[in-house]
Length: 196
Image 1 (spheres, rainbow, N blue to C red):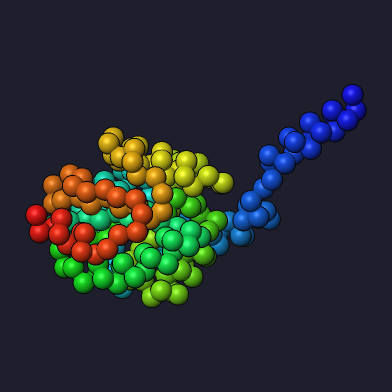
Image 2: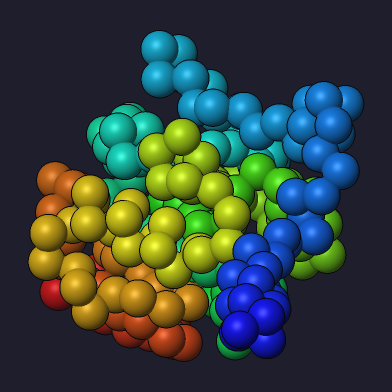
C-alpha cells in the first residue's frame, strides 16, 4: 500500500516541474522583465527604437488598422525553435526590402523571456519590434502552442491549419487574410501573392 502511495506522489510531483525561468521571480526581477503594452491612444511606434511589446488580439487589430502599407504580414516564431529562429532572420532581410509590406513579429512566449528576445534582436540586427503574447489574455508558462492557438482563434476563424513555427498570415489593404502558411517559406511566395 505504501509503495502505491509513493509511486502516486512521485507521479504527481513530476507533473509540476517548474520552468526555471519562473524560479526566483522577486519583485525586482519582475520589474526588470516588464514588457510595455501597445499604446492605442497615441502613435506609439518610433522607427528608431526597436523593443519588445505585449500584444493581444485587439491591439493587433489596432496595428493592422493604423498601418499605411498595402500588405501586412504576421510572422509567428520563437527564438528557441531551430527551424524558426534560423530561417526568420534570413526571410526578414529579404522581406524588409518590399516597400508596401509591413511585418509584425509575434512570439507565443511570455514576459520572462524578454531578455532572450532582446538578445535575438541584437544577434540578427533586426529592425522590427517583437510582440509577445499578453499573459493576461493568453495565460503564462509552459505551453506556447496553447497560447498561440488561443490567439489565432481570436484573430482568424479559418486558421486551424496554422500551428507551428514559423507560421505566416498575410493581410491585404482591407485587412482581409489572403494567405496563410506554416513552415519555412521563400520571399517569392509573398511577392507573387502581392502581385496577384
